[in-house]
Length: 348
Ligand code: NAP
Ligand code: F7E
Image (cartoon, rainbow, N blue to C red):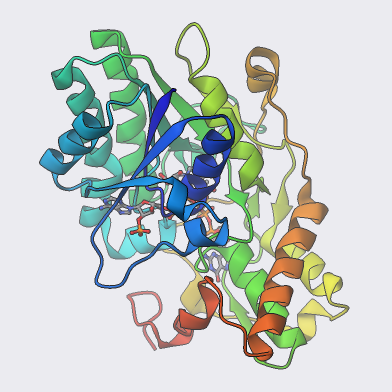
């Protein structure tokens, strides 16, 4: 039986990847960090919590990373754990560097020191391109990070290349464009919108405050994207791949379509609030996935409108169940009102 270690198994991708690998017959280990309140809702929501072996590890603690790899002796490591929210990286640039950047080296260095034949997937990102020099972006498009998050990821990208070339470690960068789902974190714009649309249509909330409506992203469906991670580690040689839909849509279009699903006019329920604008933003991303299609046989199936519909309908169903008094693993009822969170850009 093959063994996989997923760092960041409590996140969106970690949960979907665990589900996928379990179906493939893997023994799945996952790292989680100690929090004062447990955070396993996604694994419970997907009904796989009991099937996973959990190992405590924090990316800032190199010893715990080595321990997790020694205990699990994995054939494949999927390094997904990171401080992954771009907005927060402007508030915590040093912490983001320590976790999202140096965390990658802690994983690669553990593999090198333990002298094991583990294959490593590194969760790279379309944010590396920043305000990209060409559209659509390919594996050859130059990088120009626009946030502390993407600068940390750029370091991780290059360390992955360096460990591959210097030590012959099978390590791949998956350059994944935005991918979303009903278990996406509530701070990301797509889920923020679909959760608010559901609440507004049920009369639980009134207005949805948003920042930069013009930003354009290439949004895909997360359960399909995690399959590409596995495919990258099954090839003869390690390589880097863009995973995307080659479509781009603005935040405004996402909001319009989401309100359409419940028959409401987005303009009546949305307001622009400068507090949700970033000091620096990425304007347009659109990824060319032809290398992945040719070499991995991977292509996206779920397109923009379908993605929006899946997310709105699931948030709507959850709030309807909640209104009937039902309790089940789900993040939204515990999420603080964003207007109550004070940060440099959100300061009243
Ligand atoms: P996510 O939902 O934010 O999950 C991040 C995971 O990292 C969580 O399990 C989190 O644990 C863990 N983590 C954070 N800080 C940690 C630390 N100090 N030590 C150990 N674990 C830590 O992110 P995602 O959307 O699944 O994304 C997975 C990876 O792909 C990330 O590296 C992200 O940057 C990258 N990526 C994402 C996208 C996208 O569109 N989703 C696109 C490209 C690349 P807690 O649950 O305890 O917070
Ligand atoms: O923002 C704009 C915001 O936070 C998308 C991460 O998974 O994908 C994600 O990063 C756009 C930005 O995702 C709001 O300014 C407007 O232009 O949903 P997001 P992101 O920054 O693209 C990449 C690929 C990753 O690697 C990251 O880990 O939407 N926007 N109004 C807003 N964004 C948020 N969050 N909230 C707003 O109210």
